[in-house]
Image 1 (cartoon, helix red, strand yellow):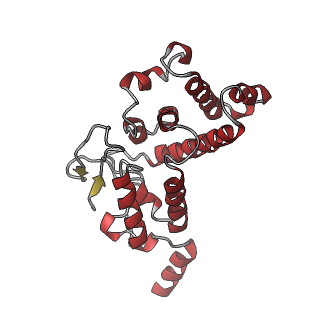
Image 2 (image 1 turned 135 degrees about the vertical axis):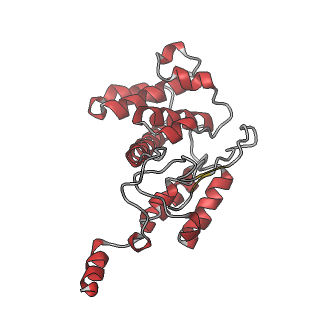
Image 3 (image 1 turned 135 degrees about the horizontal axis):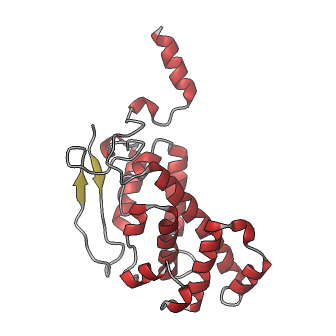
Length: 228
């Protein structure tokens, strides 16, 4: 079985530095439900993109990225979107990080819950997210954004006019739109990563097969036909 690499990198100069860790099957390291493509066998463009993202602090592990790489079109689009939006939007970096971590907590993404991409986030900040937001040391903007994220996660049908008006008291319309886009991206990503079970140590359900990279089912059918 191929080795699995988890690269932990500081997201900014003030963040604590953690040495990269190498895990594999014999070492009891993580093995998701879909076995990641070995880093050296990635498409060259994706390998360059992911290495750049790890170095810049956009990513803290390449394990899920090497699963996304099976479908190159979406892998490139996802990376490009994150490159263009990471710390580039209207919302401040701390708020973006609070939303990312809270979404990961709710949706069961262990890898994302454990990672930190901004040094201003304390253990107390993370712990208090699960309790009453009013009693924690968050700003009013942070409280309202986290409340919106929770509602988006748990019952988006219940979000109505009053919720947007409440946000508009402390956010501009542009910031509200960005907040919604950010929540949608985080929630979908964290739910998919939870399904992949990237921190599991069991045998993968779908093992690595280079013939399955960026190929539709018709290729498999043609291959089976040619063998007969």
